[in-house]
Length: 205
Ligand code: 5GP
Image (cartoon, rainbow, N blue to C red):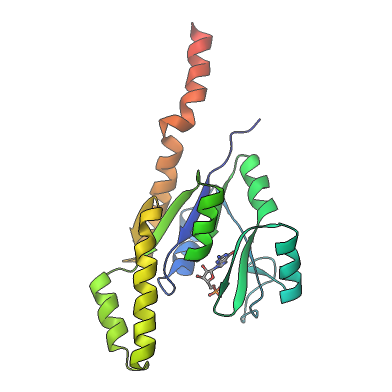
């Protein structure tokens, strides 16, 4: 039987650049992990391809998937459903390949409850002080919206403690490289290699 692949979950506050970092990582630093394409009810944006960027589905279809237990997690994010099809994740892990999820914070915490053995990476804004100033100084929002955004940002940053790693998105390339290093290091952990070594030692005795 193949060794199980790793489940890698990249998450973080909205607007932090998860999608951009993930695209860069896949383009430049990935040879051996597979992207889990999510399902969503949001409208397809120009240039997006069904089955590649997302599985674009109606609300009814999505709710059918929920009922059938075919999603590892799902969340309602600004009026649309987003979710991770469970079969693809399990089949890929069972085949020995790593699976990479890029999802928002609520969903990541649900995955953590179901699959705590995953590797949870929090992508944080480059500069927390700067984030605060930016939200406060945003000319476009009224004080109420600013307060809501601040609350949301503070709430999401408070969830860092549930993650294994935090990566600052200072530059896209640096963040992608750090994520690549995390994945490599995780593969080198003794606990993931001990069985192989034990076998060799047994054979050499
Ligand atoms: P967008 O509409 O900009 O593509 O994505 C909106 C948000 O949904 C992003 O934060 C993205 O990471 C998140 N997202 C994408 N797929 C999933 C998913 O399967 N589950 C959850 N919980 N969030 C997702």
